[in-house]
Length: 155
Image (cartoon, rainbow, N blue to C red; front, top):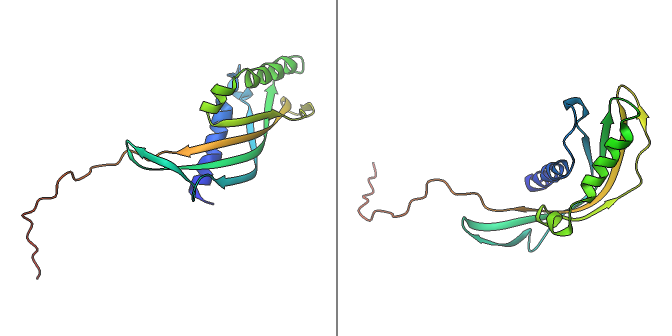
């Protein structure tokens, strides 16, 4: 897989996770499953512009994906509130806020059925259009000046 595509998927998962409310307990942390529909370079060969500080190319990928977020609860009575809280949190972000995070489109799909295993769960299903941008990283030690009194010695 293209490393930039992999970074785009990882960053999409991180972004969606940041849109969810904090769980009441660690074992109730939501699981996020991304079904990749497509990843495409944006711009010319994936380059959308140049950065002056640090200097370099800005690369981008568009990701269209289906996402299932498994909401967990320790008992059946608490699941509806947890589910609704998560949905409300996802939908409470404005278009400008979502755009700053790279989320160009966020659509709810039909919710999953309630499952009763060890924990009580229900999936929030989303369709997402996401743009990942990779800016150049700060360069390490750069030689500012090359001395002109260098002598080449050949043995």
